[in-house]
Image (tube, rainbow, N blue to C red; front, side):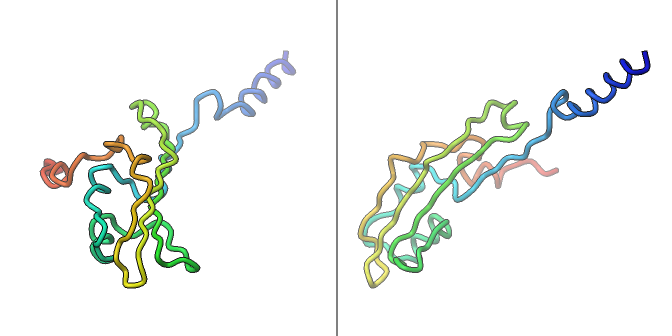
Length: 132
């Protein structure tokens, strides 16, 4: 009888976390952008204007400083999965500049979604939030 109880106890300890589940955090990587944000970027803008509108790029290649890459991947954690937020990957916006720092070409607009799940749709939603 003791061996059976010991075996049950040992198996419950070994399987411990897998029975109840483990808390997993959200893993956002990069800059979350929407099509509306990226549509503000126009050919002829300066690097400072692009940085103001989109933020700092995820990748600035030292061998090709005239190309900025904005990437975004999101792996939902425990609570995001319960809220049915989807994982995202493959969002890649590329902005090309000439030698003077002027936008010459924009690629990857089609990879960006109309809205990012889990993020407020505008800054007004953040600013008008009720106080704690």
